[in-house]
Amino acid sequence: MIRRIASILLIAWALGFVVFAVALPQPAGKGSADGVVVLTGGKGRVDRGLEVLHRGWARRLLVSGVGREVKPHEFAVEYKVGTPLMACCITLGYEAIDTHSNARETAEWVRREKIWSLRLVTSDWHMRRSAMELRRALPAGVAVVEDAVPTHPSLSTLFLEYHKLLARIAAPLWDR
Image (cartoon, rainbow, N blue to C red; front, top):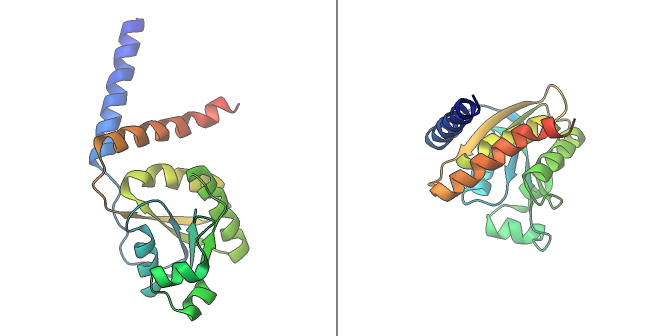
């Protein structure tokens, strides 16, 4: 009986990993939202968030998890953002150090800015866990559009992220 249960769990784990690795989330198409949040840490994320802002698909941008040493002017120069756009529409978030704190920082920004629809920009392999963490932290009723940045993740990146996702799914069970 124990072998059968262990075999079923192993097969479920393996199939889950295959689905996780093969069916990565995709970029969102056109569509507007009140705001867009970019989780730092991957190539193309900030560029995608700025594209969303420039195309008018969102009116405000939060870049969550910015290093404390990065000054707004340096960000503006690196990403070629004009002073008016930087002043009106872009917030650099310095509080987050991981995905869980990205969600908390974003939820606080959403409340402060009175945002009811949000585009989430992160890497494709990181999207599932990020979206789950964000939905747990956001106020009820806030819609989230997942806008994944395509990457070519290594097998080890996928393997690690799959296990982080499983751990965060199980976390509420441990908190009881």
